[in-house]
Image (tube, rainbow, N blue to C red; front, side, top):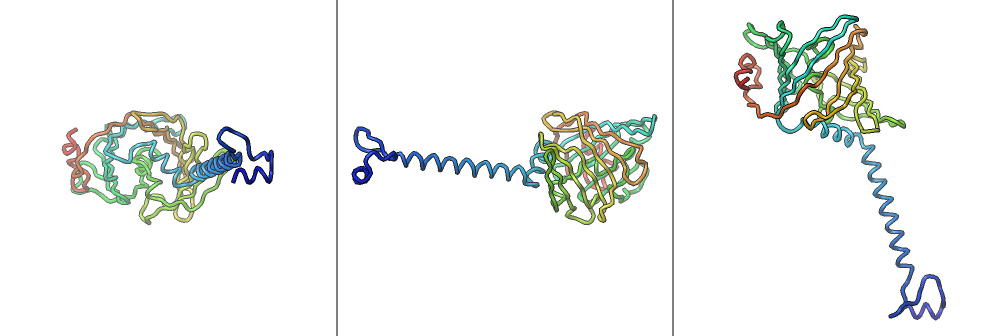
Length: 274
């Protein structure tokens, strides 16, 4: 084929003379074009992945690193009302089955209270009660911090993305709860593109009424887990008040599932051996 083309088109730029025959430059050009096309498709694929809302939530969830295994979290909760400040230390037990127990280390007046969350069901137990009481996860734990925000809301698995907008600096996600019993039925997330971190979350009622605003800053790594300081403000009333959650420590530890039973709340500390 090379000799035939050389006779027809002598000196054609697609060919060059080499020992052992002709080499078609067109092959090299085809390879370059294929490489460019593959690279372009790869870039488009990566761009699409970066803009995929579920992929964004998965990345944030993975960096937090609390989805696999059981953990004990210690938090400081500061409640501000004008010049007045109150502080509590809270311990959250996260079981691998997504069951969560919240207890108080301080102040003294609250250490006999505990809260158990299993899916969309929440119980409160206080020393002296015959049995735990069923309550809403929206109920305040301390200051403006509700039980749901304190144990951690799973936006990846408990919600579906219903809309997404993109600006030059942020992804804005609108979420809807998968179950009617979920504490907050709707949520709006503002996620910074730089670092792919949550900046603000607005928790809403089923009708879209704003209930809580959560602001995230001071991101850091704590024992391999990405955490942030969370400021919570109530959007219905007491808007001048704010509550700040600070993570103090995260410890991975095996916890018996039998301890996460509403009827065993009075014996929880004995079951986890603390």
